[in-house]
Image: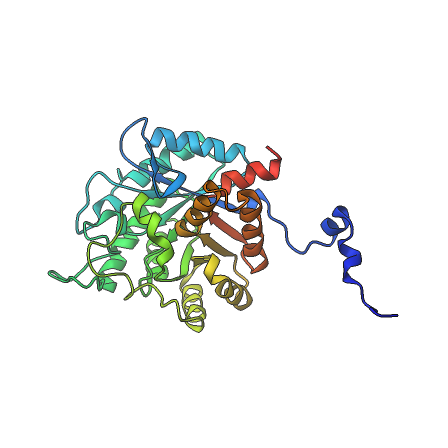
Amino acid sequence: MFPTHRPRRLRSHPQLRRMVRENIVTTSDFIYPLFAVPGEGVANEVKSMPGVYQLSIDKIVEEAKEVYDLGIPSIILFGIPEGKDDDATGAWHDCGIVQKATEAVKKAVPDLVVSVDTCLCEYTPHGHCGYLEVGDLTGRVLNDPTLELLKKTAVSQANAGADIIAPSGMMDGFVGAIRSGLDEAGFENIPIMSYAAKYASSYYGPFRDVAESAPQFGDRRTYQMDPANGKEAIKEIELDITEGADMLMVKPALAYMDIIWRVKEATNLPVAAYNVSGEYSMVKAAALNGWVDEEKLVMETMMSFKRSGADLILTYHAKDVARWLKGQ
């Protein structure tokens, strides 16, 4: 009799579907981004990212406790300093905003894994990820001098208690420079999660609102990757592995799931996907207008990241997903 094969047999009951499910989403998959600002009692909601806030350190600690209680194992810290300068002093100073936030979180929630974004764009007045030539209005970052700043930044973050260093500036050799800096300072056991394949994407817009890091001129296309390229991502991850990366990241995630898959197929290292601000804001806007079921859409998206090969997911949805998984 036709049909001979009936795959629907294994879809006929919720428990059967659960038994043969190939991928699952758990709270252990998530890293939750947080944005630290100076002051006390500060919680400024970002207009373009409903539910996301710029937080003073006391509020960061409260969020960290909530994240940990929800079963999410890690946060990633970004900082908005009081002042900016061409040497990105706020990124690597021992009293920098991320350093102080790291110290406070590790004191309050020692078992929470604190990842730190190791980049310079939030700390320079021009919004680019390193040194520029004097008078340059194109945004072409000077690669090798910038590596020295990244080394200093990573070491200062490690001194503050960071558990994972996550460099995101897409400088050539940045993983190797940071690895050597950490090792020389006695932090050979701190892992590096490299933003190995970070594309020059239009999905970053809302992030630049919250991090106050939009380029004041030019763009970042001379150092972030061309969205047209896939093979180049494999070249980048191979270089980062050679230089000492312990984990690899693809950013953005939603429009780059083919890249996540390629990276996962090419390496045995853990692969993270960054579900970035524009992806988050589009879902939030549609949900607030009643156009989509937010929970179902977000859960389907998280599952798609897992299916494409992501071991870890950086997402602003993390707390909501943790509550949904707990049935709250």
